Length: 171
Image (cartoon, rainbow, N blue to C red; front, side, top):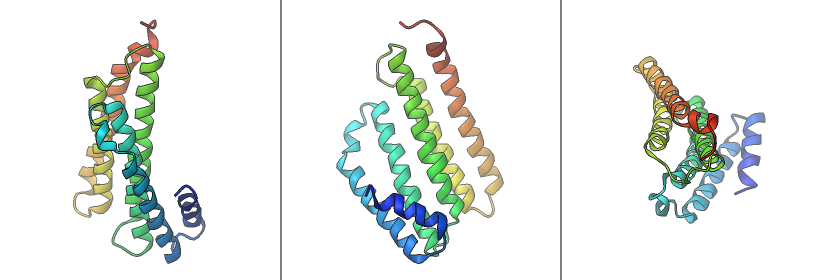
């Protein structure tokens, strides 16, 4: 899994329309799905700070699978896959690490409070809405506006909830 995916993604960069690369991307997604399944993410539902890490990694699997399907000729635009990887995986992981690191460095408990749970809800909704916009021909513009609004709301919630922790003295 750790070799297949980087090779597949590098292959996609240089040979983006090659069916063998599409198959390799799907293999990489399947191998990483197997890894993710072994991590027993459902057992982390009691603590959203842990669960969101599994969700972020699931976005990688989903994005790579979409990319593989797109390369193989499925009716999936590459932009849907790229947004699953960027808005989904990178956005989710960025907020997950920012919240966890801030709480830890600020001496706060490593548990998600309500604002944090809201952040962790908004960012996957933004990514899902952005993917829907890439797949839509009729509703693309309203979905783009909704996705951007959700994205901004997620990061605005982070600023509102976490700025005091970052700017004030440690508890």
